[in-house]
Image 1 (tube, rainbow, N blue to C red):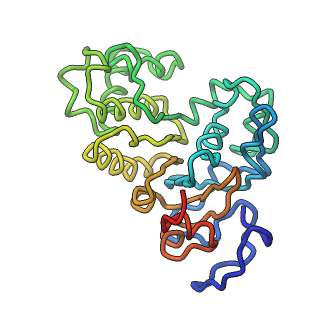
Image 2 (image 1 turned 135 degrees about the vertical axis):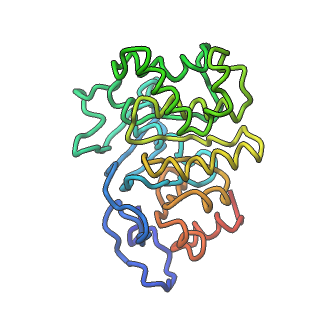
Amino acid sequence: MLNEQTVESRDKPHGVQRQPAPGGPVSRNEKANHELSIRVRDLNLWYGDNQALKNIDIDIYQRNVTALIGPSGCGKSTFLRCLNRMNDLIKGVRVSGRVEMDGRDVNDARMDEVALRRRVGMVFQKPNPFPKSIYENVAYAPRMHDLVGRKAEQDELVERALTDAGLWNEVKDKLQQPGTSLSGGQQQRLCIARAIAVQPEVILMDEPTSALDPISTATIEDLMDKLKQQFTIVTVTHNMQQAARVADYTAFFHLGEVIEYNDTQMMFSNPYTKKAEDYITGRYG
């Protein structure tokens, strides 16, 4: 997070705070919701002896899109996976610091990982539908979590999730066909429907449009704008234009650190740090 050591000596207009609170953005988007969703403090992560994240402080706000940007290998996806403990699945990972939801550290040994991943869903870079029907892709997890019982409840949930994911009208007459029979963009929306079907609070998206064509990308971006009315979204992207279009807040990662965290309009129009400005303007990355 920004501090006296990481901020280059540049005079910045617009009344930007010189010493933002730990974890808070440099300046807030006053039109956005500022209720706290996830609080991260002093987060460090190692793959074996290699430290991938260094002293991360960041607050993520409810019902906003927060974009994580930065060069390849700078820790964006690693940080994203810390939010629902997906890094636990990687051998040799060690984590310190706190990732809090409702004041509870998700890394606490008493935390139920299955319950956590229901609250914090994930959509991956490459669409990965289950080898099941379109219907079962959506209904399976809610049924396993006892969120629905009768067939009528399942039908209602499947229709609602597919509608919220912008896919219902395209698939309502072929719900028993395999999810893998859909196009790439449709598969990714199916994965989004699958994620939101278990009623999460947060949706993590790791470069969700990088494997998609421009039309499918635009569809997913429009969908993210709609979904943030219900969910907190944290997304990794290498596409600066995409971050500018979809995100309320943007965090710039570099070599495992958060160099700048700001509302997106401010970040892209008048970045607070020289490193962020150089990256956004294409001088490196």
